[in-house]
Image 1 (cartoon, rainbow, N blue to C red):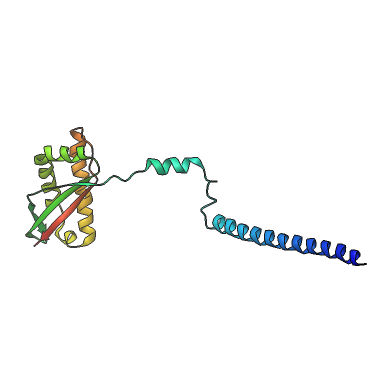
Image 2: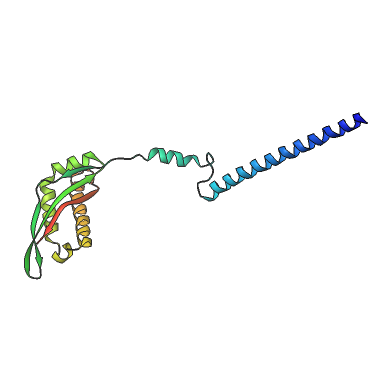
Length: 168
């Protein structure tokens, strides 16, 4: 009988070991599935499962710093306001990611300044006192500068910035 009891005890230990292993596998599987489900629903997809085009686009997009050219002399002109003459003065800077565009702007600065004085002089005094009016003026100046550069066969600039702006 002693032999009989020992043989029955050995299979009972194997059954408990199998149960513990199965529980560990189920817990690990549940953890893995929850992590995968979280990644999937957060919109990132699974790592390594994305399209290859996304990685090539990210590699192609590189940061290009902007360069600036400050126009040293202010653009000063008169502006009409309710029958009175007012003055407008603007110190400008040109922004571009292409250094050739800034070199072209330096080369053609007399023509650009002339056109910018005309744009500023044709502006409404009351508009120039509002932030929206000043941003509109900057857009018109950008269009003017890029038209001059385009006529000369040069690359365009990105923005016209006000370093100082006074109306009185």
